[in-house]
Image 1 (cartoon, protein in one colour):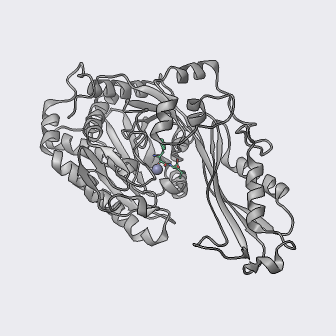
Image 2 (cartoon, rainbow, N blue to C red):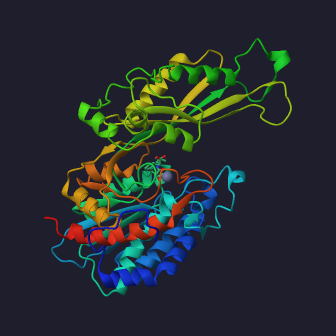
Image 3 (cartoon, rainbow, N blue to C red):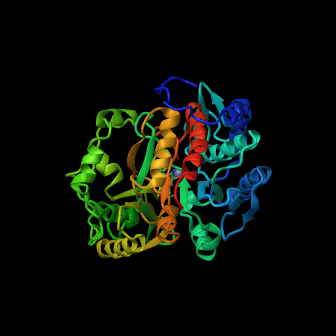
Length: 470
Ligand code: BES
Ligand code: ZN
């Protein structure tokens, strides 16, 4: 391991478990590579079979680790993997969540190496899903495996739920939770799908934004029209779409959909102070992306805009002729996919209704405009001072020699809010990727050192959780 971090004050973990982890170093790395070779892209129908393969891959490992009730549960879309290790009578139960689905690999031409041929080189795993979220899932399995090898029994009861639709809105998991609350009974939920703070600062995430994802379709005619013959007499759907999109946001970065901010919980002075105290450098953040200038809702800092304010962004648009050269047409139709990131207490359905009404009200005449809901997830907040969060903080300190910082992330993990509001569980968002890990982008990576240390944090976490009052 590198010596980037100060030496921990306490012996990180049980010596036998440490020996088992040392012994299995190569095998654990190989396990991640093997898992990451399965192209489990939830959004693309052609990968449905791969989703099953990935789910079975996990289930096999859970069975080998002695988990009970291991099941690959079919859903309308992708399977959920469930399993339990309840061997610590009277001890708390932790519900462990990760996702095995990954984002599509486009634009493939920007990958320096093949996305489905992951590798470990110069201290980094590279490949689709190694950070988000397969590496973290493998860390949980590895922690458990090391315990078994060392002949130890996990000191807490563990219930595992691994889903295959996180990157697609988690619809099937929502429905499954509704019907299976009893199987998910626990004292705390541990979600490992987040990361560290800027640079490589160990962090616990205490806020995630929600999301509402929609599509706008603008239709003019059954086929493209000659732009000389028809131009000037019909509405151009691409121009119309641009008009609609331009109306959604002002130059001040504020979203103009009426009522959009009605339910937003304002940042308190204490929230703002806590964010301002984090070691965040706007300029370093800008350069690392890199972009020429940072923008955002006026009146808020970069860090506030990044995780604590709602946003609206077009995720893709297409229309008409996009090849080389020129083609004089009026496109038959135009489309955009867009999403809003939501903060407490915005409701995705209500936000969609507002968007749909607003789009209809600003749509130019002469085209048919429809707005369709694709998926949604609630924002979530957890508490820095909850005993489970503090247990995770101690586990981090024991392994990294540093107290974690508490951060709000701009991304979403849709199921988090269901764990809190429906299952009434305190949630600890404990993850080990880095902000610049190229999640969802070409050349995704995970630092080997964080894979190694993170696995040790998880081992330590079970010990820490075991000491909590039920
Ligand atoms: N791991 C991310 C969530 C995340 C992003 C955590 C950034 C911390 C920082 C997760 O896999 C993800 O990408 N979620 C999607 C959810 C969406 C498709 C419903 C997201 O945020 O885009
Ligand atoms: Zn993701």
